[in-house]
Image 1 (cartoon, rainbow, N blue to C red):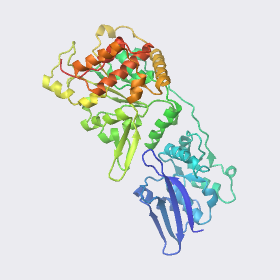
Image 2: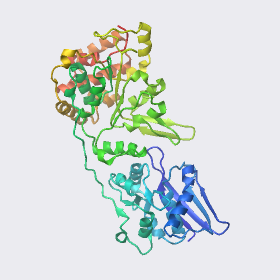
Image 3: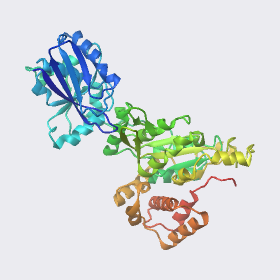
Image 4: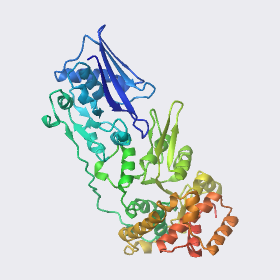
Length: 512
């Protein structure tokens, strides 16, 4: 047999389109040609495959003309994931492995020069794509991956995953006279979704004082709202943010799978953190591409890696303006689209934004304990680094004032994170039972039908919007925030007290 076909998958954003690896052996001048819009990393597979086969005593067709086609031809291919399919295709074309057995599998893996299989990015998206195709002609296919990647892909239910540590383990399994039980190196991987959650060591009680900020933190956690904390240095903004994750419930299985798929695409998935919400805190020197995603080929940025998690931006005005403006659309839609001349990639970005900032360059504007040395123009320019459209999309904006020394000297006060987390979980359960999603995600008709407002509360909100000049977006965001406050109180409808508390959290940065 001079032609062999091996099935594999590439990565295109979170999609993993099928790639057919066609290997043809012909007489003629010895050559190894690889075609099909392959990146440099893929073309280097020729040397890795040749060395891996020779190192393990496998016959390599040195006197043949080898042509490898990666179809479809217009789909970009990158990384070393096609090393294993190319090696198996050459062996199948020479008759050293059973082509019928090979047709039952899809495979991917990078080869070392000695034949060891190295992990590849995107194992979870590959398994998800294979499961989506299970109703078609691929129903009987299993997936062969390096062992490190196989345990990651096995988290996807409904797909048979086999892990291998060496090329010879796969080859022996696919020889005409072999079977799965004959080979110890190739074994089916059993999914392990045991959730390992660390002991909570940062408790909300550690933050002394700041009763109003703690209340705002609870409301943001209960409804999935974005939040901005403004206060002088050392007032506790970062402490509050790092304790926010302790108020959130564990991810559901579907949410865990979605989060893990994005992390797998970036090579950052850790199976030991299954079910945990990611807490991303990039430095304020992060570029727009680092936050939004990009590159060639495009990869997810911090906002996508925080999908179903928390994105904490400390020193918010210090971020580049372009990076901050990239947050606007994802805050509304829950996804981000990276468009390039040749291709378009969509990544999920349903994250919860937490941000902190000083009120002025010196940090002490409005501080009763220390005088501010900034001029009004400097304060205005500093606060003006945040655009109105971005602030309009932040639901909760709260002051975090300086805590007096006599309060710091007292014992910790307030409730623990565990107590607040139980209220947050109850409010979230109420929202999911009522509308199938958190209040922050309500849009359009769902918002109108699920948010019950008393006539007096609606009139109060309309009056506030008219006096303060709020936009239509601000009107509906206050409405959703008031619905969350009512859910925490167990109230069926929003009344004036809930609405008044929601309105006070729409703090607009300005010089007083």
